Length: 69
Image 1: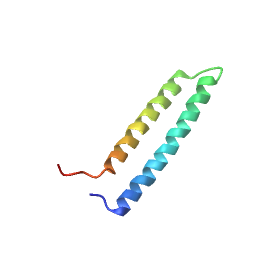
Image 2: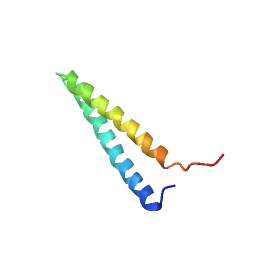
Image 3: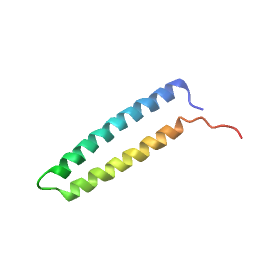
Image 4: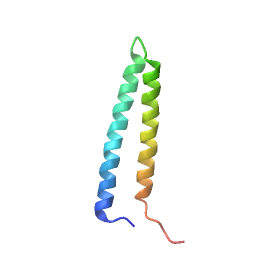
């Protein structure tokens, strides 16, 4: 079970990762609309974005309390 300080730390981490995820989305859109597309960089940004999404999901699942069956 997490205490209040740990929950707040998780929330802050999730918020930071969510902002980075949004920023990557903007960067990907800008790169896709550019005249000369750097496909390697685009692929790396998309991969990082997926990693962030997975990390956010893991952190959110840690905040869900375990229920005894």
